[in-house]
Length: 474
Image 1 (cartoon, helix red, strand yellow):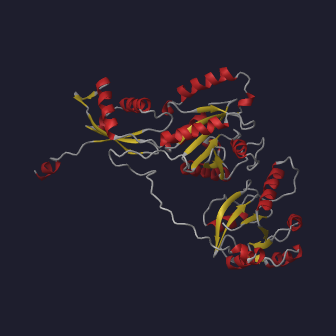
Image 2 (cartoon, helix red, strand yellow):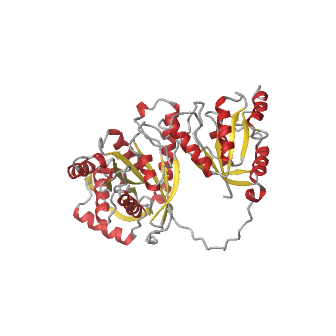
Image 3 (cartoon, helix red, strand yellow):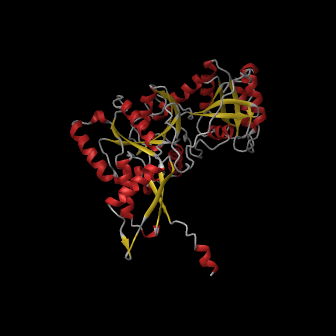
């Protein structure tokens, strides 16, 4: 991207709507309620022939530094300092407010290029607000409608005029051609085909999920070494799922901070429903999910439901017991947590659990190492020959039960998919195989092929009968 643009303005003037319009996707949450956006969200924008990085910010308000609004304001000011250009949005329909004048003065003092944008100009009666915008002393306002896409050509011209053509259209750099090989990340494997060696350099997508106020944003800020995400004692601060990129031991990590997920019965407001839906999308997009528990009140019912949700989605999961600095007897509490993990999460036997403190940084390296180790297991491929030898030995040790006087036979086994590991077994009467024997097979796979803590799926199918067509003809 050639340059960076920050969208700023008071609450509810249409900043997130314009952000979604420029990135071409509904990434930011949009609602009529003022103050929906709290963190700054970056995105890759396209405006006619311009390509640049766009940053959605929280609405600027006058508030004390210790308040939530004050911390949101600090995040927005950081985005303005980071950007090369600011798009200052006003609501042409509502007209100028004293807050707009204060923000205009603040942007003018920054000394950076500013494009004044009069949003909602398609509304009846917006002319008055448009002409009032001249009094801000930031040049001629650009009338647009972010919701309907009107005025985008004029906005493009205003950005180019403000930042300069040399910055807006940098000279292209010829990059040497490279041979790109396709990888079968989620595709099926051929029978007997071995998986390639684990790629230690491939970027990894990690989502952070948990109940509200478990310390998810604080944990990411500690990883980054800066106050990148809004934090505080209030529960439910994070609304949008924000992605940040950083490097850990030479490997790129793309980490997603998500909104806290409460019990479904308690989620009544539309805005919270949108936030939870955004968090669920982040889980589906991620490869490994860190589930943050509050170590002072662990294993609430909602914690267990979140773990079960992540595993049902097929993601690799790691537990992080946060706020470990508040535990008085760490050894006793750790032993109790390990016992409860094994007892309450039988579907994730062997899942890695790490005590950490996002506030002090304790245990973060061990947590990331557990994430990498779990991702290796999640990508593991086992040869068909080894699986069939294992299947034969397993049936000798514990034969399948007899149903209606007829013994079930497991004939053939192969791995059909990785991420997560999935297997296919050819057997007689697959619909009659009891669930207890399926669990026996899954636990055996976990133990004998070292597949701890990741979802393991087994599918059964009946072998094709070569004489079936002859029976039909008769």
